[in-house]
Structure formats: C-alpha cells, structure tokens
Image 1 (tube, one colour):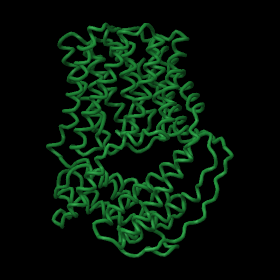
Image 2 (cartoon, rainbow, N blue to C red; image 1 turned 90 degrees about the vertical axis):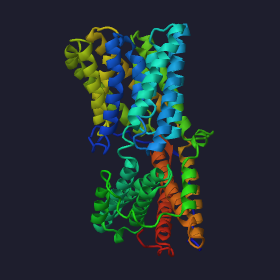
Image 3 (cartoon, rainbow, N blue to C red; image 1 turned 60 degrees about the vertical axis):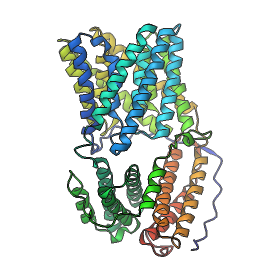
Image 4 (cartoon, one colour; image 1 turned 90 degrees about the horizontal axis):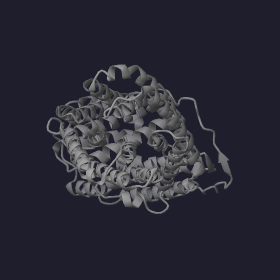
Length: 556
C-alpha cells in the first residue's frame, strides 16, 4: 500500500538560540499519583523492621547501613510482579555494589578530595544506568544519597563486610515487602496500567468531541499515546494468562479510541477503567485469547536488555551523566573549600537536579531549594520531639519517609519538605547533635549544590539533542512504512507493527521535547515532527481498523 509522499524537509537553521528558563508553574501542585500509598507504605514497613530490630539490640548507630537496603522498597511499583521481582533484585544488587565501593573508599582513601571524586563518579554512573534501564522513580537519587553518605562515614576495612551484610539483609526485607501484595492481587500493576490507558483515551475522546483542536488535542493525544504504550509494555513484560488476555483486549479498545476518537465512548471507557479496581473479573475475560505466537514474540522483545544500546556512544543519556559527574564534583569541592561539615549534602543536591534537559533541570533546582528551605524549618519544629529518645527519633524518621512518598508526586518541592528532615534525622541516630549547626550546614550545602549543579548543566552542552530528533524521525518513518506493509500482510504481523509504530511516535515526541528544553540549541524541525506525527497517527488508525488509510485531511 502506497503512502503519501513525504514533505520535503526544511533545512534546520544552524543558528543557536538561548531559551528562557521558566518560573511560572514550577511550584504548582499537581494531582497525586494513583499509587502514591504503595511506595509510601512499602518504605515505611521496610524501614520499620530493621529500625526496631536495631533499637532492641541497642545499635541504632548502624541505621545508615540498614536504611540503604530498606530504601530499595521505593522502586518498581509500576512493574508486574514477575518483572518486579527481577528489577527489585537488581536494585538491591546495585545498592549493595554502590555501598561496597563507598565503604571501601571511605576505609582506604587518603582524604576528602578523593572521596568527593569517587562520589561524583558514582553519581554519574548511577544516573546513566538508572536512565538506561528505565527503572523509574526515584531513579538514581536514592543510590547517590546512600553512597555519598557512606563515603563520609568513618570506616575501617574490617567493618566493611559486616556493614555490607546489613545492607543486603535490609535489601532482602525490602524485596519481600515489595513482592508481598502479589498473592492478593497478582495482576494489580497490569490492571492499573490498562485503566490509565482507558482513562487517557476517554480524555482524548472528550477533547475531540468538544472540538478543542490545536495544542489541547495534541497534548491529550500525546498523553493517550504514552498511556497506551505503557499499558502494552506492562502486559508484554510477563507471560499471558486469561486475565492478561482480557486486559489485552481492553488495551486494544483504548488504542482503537486513540486511532478513532470520534467513535469512542468516554463514559464506557471510564466505566471499564473503574471495573479494573480490586480483584474482580476483568470485563471480556471469556473472549478468545490473543494469537499465542504473537504474544510470545512480543514478550521476548519486551525482555531484551536494551540498556547497552541506550549507553552506546552518541546516546542522549551520556551528556546528562556527564553533567551529573561535573556538577557533583563542583558542588562537593566547593563545600570542602568552605569548610562545610558534610560536603556530601552539596553533592547529593547537585545530583538531584539533573533531568532530561536544562529547562527541567532548572525547574528541579528551584523546587529543591524551596523544599529544602521549608524542610529545615520543619526539622527545627520536629527536633524537640525527636530528642525525647531513640523511639521518638525512629517514629519521626518513619513519618518523614512516609510523608515524602505521599507528597512527592504532587510536586518535588513538597516531597523535599519531608525528605530534608528525614536526612537530618539520620545523622542523629549515632548521637544527638546541635540542630542549629545541622540546619546551617544543610542550607549552605543546598544553595551550593543547586547553584553549581545548574552551572554544570549550562556548561556541559548537549548540542546533539537536535540530531536525536533526526534519528527519531527516521525511525518513525521506518515504523510507519512497516505498518503500511503489514496492512496487506498476515494478520498476526499487524499488532506487532502497530506496537512498533506507537513506540516510535512516543520516542519521537520525547526526543523533540528533550531538545526543546535545552537552553542553547539550534532551531528544531518542529514542522517535520508535526507532519511525521500526523502521518504516523493516520497509519495507526488504519492498523487499528485493519482497513485502508484515512484521507489526508481526516482527523485521526
């Protein structure tokens, strides 16, 4: 089947432009995540078990090492349980490896200059690996927080194995906590991902029905495409069974609405999403199962270890990792030069800033500073209660951990209001300290880390971001051509071609948004991206219907 001839691409301008860094909306609160209570509850339980054990043994000075393993409970809540088991195991291994390097360096390093250098290298490596594996929130930040604190903990070589064993033991507890809901709700993550896709498709249908064209329709369509793609990734991460087969059909229904929104029924889509709550029967569970060979092939593709390719030379992840290393080193050495007692706080602040581009990094910097400043005020109010005794200290720390995860999905700065007192309380487990000195160090380190982290983000440019748009455009064109060929080929080939086209459109939008947020960037091919997206969604509509391509002017 022939496709319409592509537009002649306009040659992008090589003249670079400096973009304004925004302030409006940076601190605005959003809706909480639909699963905010899962990481919040998990980390509360995973921390409470070793904390109370150490309290009973009178060894609260070891909390830092068990806390490293406990914080692994924050990861992988979006993954199906079979995939979560593997991902959490790797997170525990990565945490243990980071702690092992940090503790060994702390025991053998000749001075703080080496410690900061190792901390910056670890932060860059953790950022690159977490982004490449797409482990999800909280990403590299927890690993960097733990390894940086471990670097500056007094250590002897003979203590390292015992402290590392505490981290692994607490990590095993975190793994069990993360997997605990599996017997009660074995398809919970897949059901939630499918429900999100249905709701996003309903929202897109509402926008189209209201005839709200332009940017509103584009945003709704992009959100629905992302949600549908995420649902398919979740469903293909594990082996198909009757429940997942029914979820496949609901995801296909959301995908059909994405392709033909005018024919969608938003009320019915939302009703189907609501029916996926709990453990009841999935609507349509008695229908025929998907093609088995197709499902096996797509499950195998979903399991491929793609992180090596994402870290290949020229990867868009590498400039961000380089920014992380440079920014952490600058912040750590500046804190050392000023004689701040805990330079790793400045290092961690810098590491927390780095997002996909400079604009997002700037926004995160503003959020971090505001959250930390409010957080030290919260610590000042909380510390009299925490100093009543070790039991009170544990309770305050656990409540801060729960509050951080409960609030952080609404806006990062709000989560920092709880993260900051939690980090300050961790230093109190060995012995109670002067709150005024802790607060002063934290404020200085926050300002240093944020300022120098942003300097590194601007100084380490990512001028190849526009080149990645060209690669994404080429990939989207190949996926569209493949999908059009599949329209006249064997039926089992069409769903795979549709998944590939959807993934390429998601990647194209992500590449464009990443490049658009770079502070210093040449003119981007926005018109070509819009044309490619429009053509891709027309073909996507045809693959969903299994019929010919819609007319050139038809709305997908």
